[in-house]
Length: 526
Image (cartoon, rainbow, N blue to C red; front, side, top):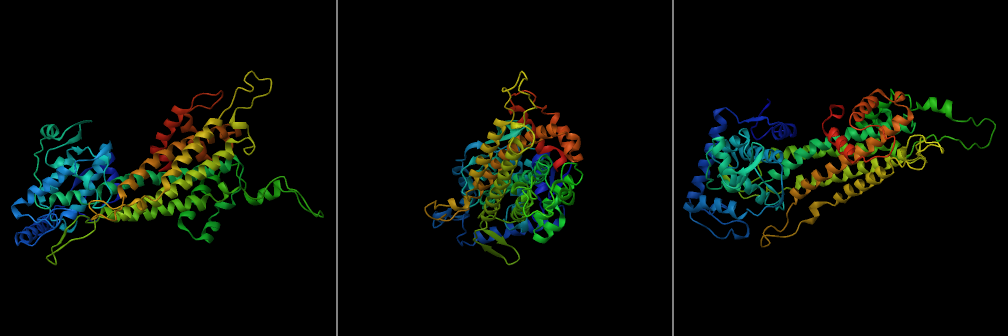
């Protein structure tokens, strides 16, 4: 099994996914310097608060109540208080996999540069939860994304102390019961440690990391749907030539065009433009006018596809950078700078970068969903596909099933419905910020909501692409799959193992769900 080594600086989205979804083990640095720095940071914090200087959230109350100063001997109890009163998370629960990503992201942020000033024993306790797979059950609702993910992260803080519920051995049980079974001792959080755990962006960043990896796969699927749509409609290769995208100069467009061209160049159905001109275009000769029977350009949903999915690819790249930087940030408050022997009251808990990344991604994703909807119309509608109405099998008027086959008519409706649903996720969640907490948190990020909405939207688009793919494979069979590109034939074979050709109308809901799950895992689109 893979082991992921973390140090606060180098955690990747792929490593988050390995720990969350594949159960990879986690290791902290073995070198003594790492642990010595944590000890020194903690010692400085304790010296600082012992001096009597009011220290936000350590020897003062929280947020707007920070004018209330308490004695040092109450500092530990105050941290347990913040964990308790934030136990107001509501709604559905995040999955175990998301919970594992949350614990990993929080641990990585808390050890970065020893700026969080937690005790080494707390870092080791979070590590133990991960490696023994005792994972907090965290409600999805209740975070405004600044001061970080206070309420959802309180569920991690509580579990460390042996409270609330956890995922363990495939079920939900109390933390106390799981600790007993797993041989874990609860740990009381002490001065500043409640804030160190709760006052950060780890829930939104964990959700965004897992969402990003799923969303990355949709780029290749979108480009495949473009390729097969071009094959079905007997399109031209020109829009996908490397030189065309190089002239435009966007990396994402170049990648999309290259992916599509890598498929269609081996297809017998896509025209090389020179061959198309020779074969399908009537010569003008001495005539003054000719109404050509064939158009020399494909419609936008094919010809402009690299420019659309290219934007998606470039947005993915931008989002990856923001998410990775957030994963490797110290994002609680206050922060300790042991080198300068200083303590900073900060706003690093603000999840604006994650919110922006997810806001941008939802718009880019809705655009490729819209592209799919338009391409599906072209291949399903008998007025455009040069095959049959609604992709029904050829049915002569005297056939017993004549008039009783409607084929993919409802599939197209569902594709359009899913496209519309995906589009509703595009409103920039960052703009829903509103003052809260006695006007102390007067501008908040809403990053966790943005990340959650992106994850939900991704699931919808997988379903839409599955429906589009079912229609494309039906069209490929009607047109003659032997003339399609070798890669298209591979996809066809795997889809047909899940969903047979639609000879007579049948329910396709189970087929679409099965294909959607296959799209999430098949190595063909990795």
